[in-house]
Length: 117
Picture 1 (tube, helix red, strand yellow):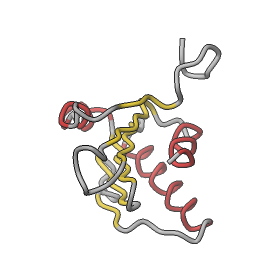
Picture 2 (picture 1 turned 30 degrees about the horizontal axis):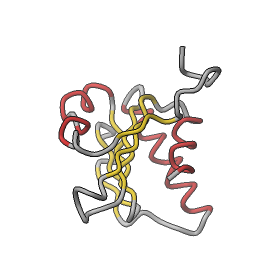
Picture 3 (picture 1 turned 60 degrees about the vertical axis):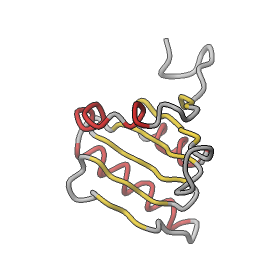
């Protein structure tokens, strides 16, 4: 999960959050939510993640929404990655739907961390 979050952060994804859904569902252990600046950016983030998986001789169990770039879901087994364009993320509000799950911002807010004031 750390590798997924780091890659997204390095590729300028915004508002990266990790939801620990283990107490709430057997579907997956964690969800990673991130926002791209546009549909093109969301598709580029998707391709970067898939490329990194190929390098590691792994693959996603499924990928949905790749062509549209509004909301891409990558099922990595114990992690499900949701990549959104900004309006779509706001509209669906997965953070609100999974409000009972512990949520963590990536990277952790530390003094001097890029992206934090």
